[in-house]
Length: 336
Image (cartoon, rainbow, N blue to C red; front, top):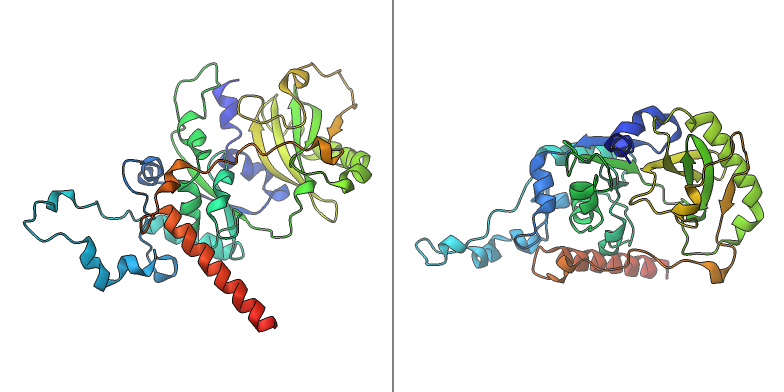
């Protein structure tokens, strides 16, 4: 695999060309200071200070009466041990706020290649849904999988010349609460031929896929021929799609062939077999029974979140969970 092939799968590279058949997305270039913040594990994890009270850290951190607990008297022997001021990214935050509003009030984030799916556990909703800058940063900072984008994107390249791209981007994608996971599929393209399609969510058996298997295969094949074939510049790659209720198809993502991309219900050895010229015999694989489901691949809790100090990621998670519980309790009482 070449660096060029990996670079072509960055969302800021492919989205402009496939914008009309993808999910509405706003993309922002990230300052290097923000990248260093995401990588910094030298001290306690604190979310950036917000430019408004809407996204601010817990009030007790900024309560003047309690700030005395964090102050060291002038001339004290401990003066040199004062923690550095919390980070702040006001320009980026303003852009993100504008994008969230423009995209309907809720988004899910990703960097050049990856989304922080492994950190959804820290969200009060258990998902990647974000409505504020702080929620986005919490997901990004708590994700282990994003280290791939930040440090290891080219590890599988045979011509690796750098450990990271020169620029990083934050993609904010419109959040759709009604998306059905059973209608997401990964497509495998080798030598510019569609050679396989796999159910994307392999941890669950969906009976509806058995009923629609042949029809869905034909639908995705035709979509590939009409909208993707020869338009994506690599010869070998994968792409993820979503089939809507009205049978339209949306491109969700592009990924390199092999390396860190999961083959799901296939294996790379069988996908590597050269396709027959002109063959339309593409296999769609689905989980065909409850016994055939696959286990989840990323279930570990990041070690960083053993830190429960005020302002830490775990502290924020507990506050989010408490707020969600109170909201549900109020809704129940109102309904009663």
